[in-house]
Amino acid sequence: MSTLEIRNLQVSVNTDDGMVEILKGVDLTIKSGETHAIMGPNGSGKSTLAYSIAGHPKYTITGGTVTLDGADVLEMSVDERAKAGLFLAMQYPVEVPGVSVSNFLRTAATALRGEAPKLRTWVGEVKSAMEALNMDPAFATRNVNEGFSGGEKKRHEIMQLELLKPKMAILDETDSGLDVDALRIVSEGVNRAKNANNLGVILITHYTRILRYIKPDFVHVFANGRIVEQGGPELAEKLEANGYADYVSK
Amino acid sequence: MSVLTTNYLTPTGREEAWRFTPLKRLRGLHDGTAVQSDRESLITKGALPSGVTFIRENLEPLSASDDVIIERVRGSASSVAHLAIAANTELTEPIFLGRSAGGMDTAEFSRVRISLGTHAVATVIVENTTDTVLAEDLEIYLAPGSNLKFVTLQEFESKSVYTARHHAIVDKDAIFKSITVTVGGDVVRILPTVAFKAPGASADLLGVYFATAGQFFEHRNHIDHAVPHAKSNVNYKGALAGQDAHTVWIGDVLIRAAAEGTDTYELNRNLLLSDGARADSVPNLEIETGEIVGAGHASTTGRFDDEQLFYLMSRGIAMADARRLVVRGFFNEIVSEIGNEEIQHRIMDRIDNELEKAGHNV
Ligand SMILES: Nc1ncnc2c1ncn2[C@@H]1O[C@H](COP(=O)(O)OP(=O)(O)OP(=O)(O)O)[C@@H](O)[C@H]1O
Ligand SMILES: [Mg+2]
Picture 1: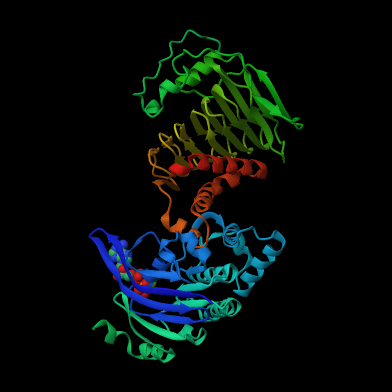
Picture 2 (picture 1 turned 30 degrees about the vertical axis):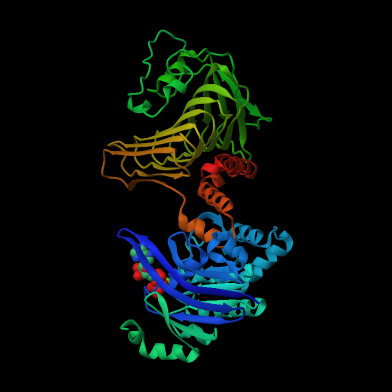
């Protein structure tokens, strides 16, 4: 049983006009097995929250805490956070030229497991992870995300989620850019990871569509750098019908 | 070429061709003060297949050169080491040439010729190791319809000074591909140049270099499109790490008035891995006819991409390993073209080592 605790998190980015505050005090607690959907207008700071938890160097933490089972996440380097059990499926996965998917996955698995996976079982492990997400095995020899379509990049993220087995995952708009079949396939991947590892999930999305496949326990409305309302799955339906006008004008 | 009376013009460093080169570190190769050795270090590795000969003979140069060190080599070398691949010989295995005999007290002036008969197909790999002072005039002739992959590996020890011109003359429908790898030496200055002799010829010049603290590596490509319908492509990639690591890439492409239907592109990318290093990159396209298929160039010099490192590290990969992956990935595009696993591993390992040596500065 793990707990990710975000307390009064305040984050700024450095711009040409100086530091701009994006997150204005975010509070959120996620336990193993729970799924928290975060919905909110463009530019409200959802990706900023995701990146800040993962440790992207662009963001400056100006206040608050993030802990995983009591350990100070903000003190950890990016790779240490992954080793502690955090995973970020990115809104815009990064292309890494010249680095093959298979080399990348093996290097990551070696780092996370503390030893190189046995070659014999590893090849099969990767193959079945790819098959489960309907990815052509040829992706293994391609360079990481290079030339992948938007949907292929997202599948690749969820394939890593299944392979690397984190405790807590933040999925930043994993559903954007997926066709109907891919949405189902990717959602099933997330649900498998939830069941297999009792994964805790923060699911950032603009659409209720994905929530039909991945059932949220909680829905949070994010606006202007903070959580402005919380509720159950019914809140998502309300948002889809009414939009964010109530929250943004406040 | 035994006339030694010429008064060679010693470069001062103000000349365009010499403005980047640290002349003081050339150990007298440029000003005639180097003491000539009797080394003839170039040898073949393993038995030569039929259709291939390697002999020393007297040969007139195939091309003019305005490089003063090449002139000195031509005035001093007593014979030419000539690797000849007979017409219609199709080799499936590479021919290995190498230099491992060296010495820093005297300088070797070496002339080399590689010639392919019509429709010959070959891969030639030259392995340069050891500590040496070496000036080399290497000329390649590709007869019509022949195909050569020419790999040179500068894996010198840290004191070496190597200046060379690798000039390929590419005849009708011949295909030339060179891969120039420079990862060792104190000063390395190579002129990989091409002249097209007839239409239908093509040249692909690829290169990688990695300079660490204090090393100077210069590559000056020159491609002369003097005939119609020839194709050239240049892609050189370099990385630098450490104080006063310095690389120079010059890409001169000349499309003469007669060279209609020319298709050319050149690219140089540099990865600056630390402060205190300097990468000069100068593409230079001269076009005398508008009747061409394409002509372009690009040059970039940048640091580690934070987004790439973040992505890798977010999967648990430690910073040093993430950097190694990115650097390997950067070079892989070209190193993988060598087509020999053992050499590719060796070069990548050397690059890892160089990166590690530069480690704490990176
Ligand atoms: N370097 C920067 N300079 C200025 N503003 C920035 C910078 N980086 C981020 N921001 C701003 O921070 C705000 C939050 O961005 P973020 O990406 O977190 O939004 P989001 O909620 O994920 O939006 P979306 O739904 O469109 O993905 C945006 O207004 C964005 O413009
Ligand atoms: Mg976003």
